[in-house]
Image (cartoon, rainbow over all chains, first blue to last red):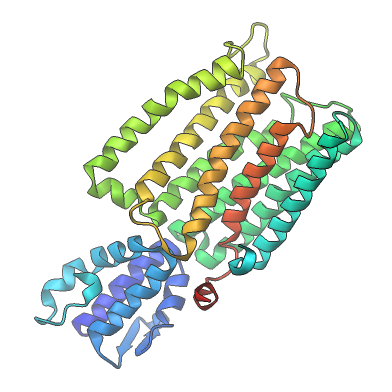
Length: 92
Length: 276
């Protein structure tokens, strides 16, 4: 699992702790992101930073800036592993 | 306003509208005793009773007791249900025992714990709205948490003890039950109001999106319930209370606001519809 997929897992897990199964349902709405949560499988078939931005955006639509802050906190430990210039805007 | 609401919210808003019309009818026709007033008390109690039931049963959408928001929805709903249950018992005393204001009574088994569960639910809600996050990040937020109870305590003490209870919190010769309730109600109301003010203040910067309005309704409902309980205490102290008085209209409004807010969480989020 590459660093972007790990970030997606961390974000969904952090949101799931707050909003329950709605976090997974919302993640499944994101284009180019396949979520098989039962098997903890994530597949990104597009521009990875953009997909993560879109993921954060679906949570922001529900609860606003707190969703962005929670996502940032969740991804914080992995940010250093993201290749230069590919950091998702939502996590800056 | 009703366009983006779910079916539960539309039903409860319509019912609230009918209750307001009923109250206006009682007011203009100078009804202050008897069955029509008892009916009003019974019928407005159904708002939190059924709203709370729906909220508890639908909390599973948000993970029930396994997630923070699920717990918030469940406990606020449980508080609403208990209040409605208390009102049902109140109505039993009205209709079958012919007691217009049964206090203390078995109705308090529903009323008294409802405030505790509202505070507990609001505490969990504070995580979802970002209040707890703000508290961790900002010194100003910490200052608000310290100052809010102090600022609210003085006017609250004046309103709840001097105005509403004539300066006497526990009159002489009261039973143990009434003494406990006389202290517990104003203290619980003060805590709920303080919690609502702190959560609203701390969440302001972070909370948004399609559930901002729902959370605001819940917190506003807590504040209105504080006013309603204070009016009830004032009216019972002065001996002017009757079922369906203006204090009951304030309580109806407070319960409606909380129920309406919590019912926003009774269906899965429909982001596409919200954008329309």
